[in-house]
Amino acid sequence: MKNIKLIIFDLDGTLIDAYPAITSSFNFTMRKLNYPAQSSLVIRRAVGWGDENLLRPFVKPRDLKKALLIYRNHHKLSLIRSSRLMAGVRILLVRLKDKGYKLAVASNRPTKFSLILLRHLNLRKYFSYMLCGDKLKYGKPHPEILNRIMRRFFLKPKQTLYVGDMVIDVQAGRRAKVKTVIVPTGSSSRAEIVKEEPFRIIAKIADLLKIL
Image (cartoon, rainbow, N blue to C red; front, side, top):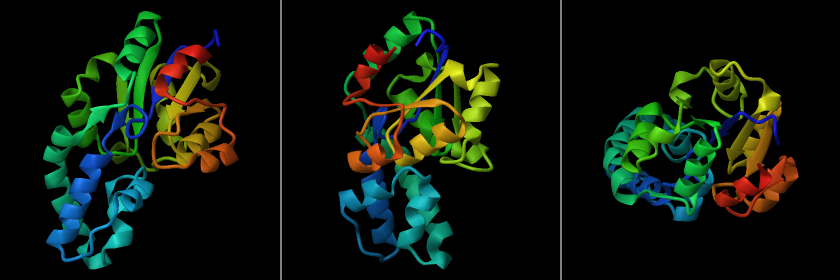
């Protein structure tokens, strides 16, 4: 893949395991508003569309604004307490930077919380740019986030690789005409990912080097 100059990464489930933090903040919010707590699996399957969409199916419309405020206030601390890197991420990013690739983040997570994660886990220095769902008219699976990042670097789809963990990542990549590599460590099952026919499916994030 000699033409690739830019590699765009999803965040949650791809580079970072924040699921314990999300589960903690989610169920804290449910308890505060007298809604039933949910299992970690149910919450995990709802992740990936932004925090507002995470909460919406579980609360009444009149409670959504309050739920979001409670969730975000709690989440600032739970991210620091309960998030960790996926295995092999730091070595991968160091090697990609050494090889001269431009690296960027594309996340449906709000900017504030993405920055908390990147700073807490000491990842910010590896990325030249980050774009998140609160800065967009449309989140993934719409291709806007990938198209804007490519324009930022004056690069074309054929010069770009996108790495994610979910069905919506494959769909966003396809719509942006970008080759998409999926690591099934997030919210989508392997069967769901296979059905979407991404460019590649890798067992672990470190295997990206084998493709490049």
